[in-house]
Image 1: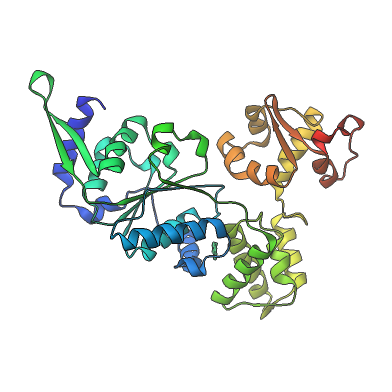
Image 2 (image 1 turned 45 degrees about the vertical axis):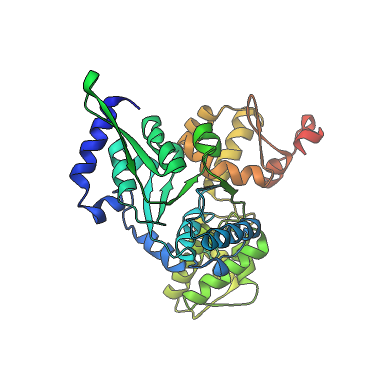
Length: 360
Ligand code: ADE
């Protein structure tokens, strides 16, 4: 890191030393209504967390071992598609380790001093949760290295020949990083996480359990088969399941229905543009664009983004992972291609050229 950055960083720490509460949670997190709703449904302990059984069992071992050594859990990187429960797990780690969780995000840390301030305000054992850690600037990332490795900050005070270096001790802490783009994390940062966990899409049975749990918490009665029907329509993602349950509840409430029926689920899904396969309008627009305008592909990401009026990042991080996982989309070095399954979903004839195993 440049000396000038260290100076800024040091000055910032001096100024913010007494503003613990303000600096602990950066402005990136605002209490949006949907966040509040999500939080009421979030499992609080690992025993309540449905799915991700490998991640849970490894975490339980590492947390117990750390507790036995009276140490914080090793730094932990969580990656996976949005809505799969990375933030939820970070808070669970905090509770299971009886530690405070300080929340920030990569883009919210604008200067090295912002991070230095967060780090110097951590208590022993605290969890620092950095969401979207792949969006952290390189100069800021460098501050993290010594903090992660040695629990210290190396500072340079002054400029030019009179500059002095100073080492500031930090309390032992756990960094939990979350990202939707594991590949965008630099190797030096990734290598400093002893624990790296990938969150996968949930199975249909797990999603059904999530829907039932959410309905229980919201005191919603579900008719037979409804939990499974909702579970099939939420892109294998708990956050979407929770939103769907809430939408269906609202549609039922307007009609003064005390139990959610299969008909109410169908009509709500119709109104939301979600089809039998659980794909929404944007999913279908992506596949239609590839099929109708480019004969099935390959199409470059930027072209696809322009045609669907979505950001490239949104396509890559939000839509594509599920379409790939479900086998509707194929990524090749030349671009995105629709698969045979995509043609079938759109009710189109599968082209003769698509008989090869690659696309079936
Ligand atoms: N709500 C959101 N994610 C969940 C999960 N994995 N288990 C239980 N409830 C959830």
